[in-house]
Length: 281
Ligand SMILES: [Zn+2]
Image (cartoon, rainbow, N blue to C red; front, side, top):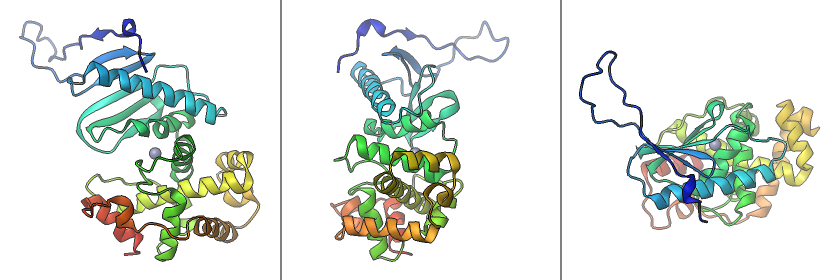
């Protein structure tokens, strides 16, 4: 998708020097290059992104904003400019809803993840992680149903992962997943990261089930009330049983964790933690 070149402006980043050091020669600066493209502010912390990449980020971000606005009209995005930060190095993508900033890393840049991140900006991440991650994962699934390259559902969709957890007796109970407070991500992998990953998968699967079984208004009620029984009119054990039964029925033969994450057979450290968690270890 072409982005109008005339919209681009490069601003020389303000030199950050020590106070009163007006006469010092400017130090090499690591401030990002800042672009304004398609109504977005794009900060290139690598200072090396090609014009094509900057345009791609703006185009995909624009499409994500349009798609999420259509999918979740109840959560209009603020009018302020959205910033995309391209960070040097490697890490886990994140968002800052209060400042409308989306951050991704140079290594492992996944623009397909933008709808997920835009959902977080749209809702403002006001509720618990299970609800916020759930709707972001579900929206991404609806907007790109064939995609299995996105965190957290690599290789197979959330219902299929949950079916696997069920087979392996490792499902995190609904009450526990719903109650998860801060999800502690760790790029290199950890037990906490694996639990966060599984809560996120389960949140996406559960959200899909609420939309399918109860409808959109029921999910909106759940989001607002933050109360499973109050919103859905059944106790947690019954909801859990119905949800998990639906996932098992939908995907009776899920891929193994190793097949789903890395068919070539070499798991990263992080993936190894996830598969251990999926095995119930
Ligand atoms: Zn998220």
